[in-house]
Length: 122
Image 1 (cartoon, rainbow, N blue to C red):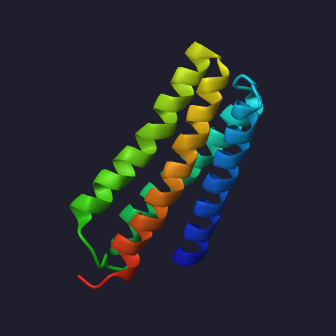
Image 2 (image 1 turned 90 degrees about the vertical axis):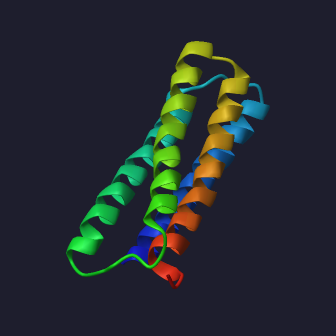
């Protein structure tokens, strides 16, 4: 189940990132589509937060460093909020590109969080 959630999170972040990058580089300003894609990534990060809290409570103890995981998760949760806020204020094509870069960075962070929390020996 955790592996499936990670695959969904990474896939959504990559698709949202590529969508925002393509639209931004094509000269499109932030739209409901790009902001909605970033909001979906944020919702999945909140799900990740809940899973990381509930998982140890049900006996699935983390295998890596909780501080490193927490820093990645905190950064990943704040990144789309900051990028989305900037996109709402700036409304330029570069804000759309930044949304794309943020979503792609989150895909990498989610994969690394999965490695820290559920895979590596600790």
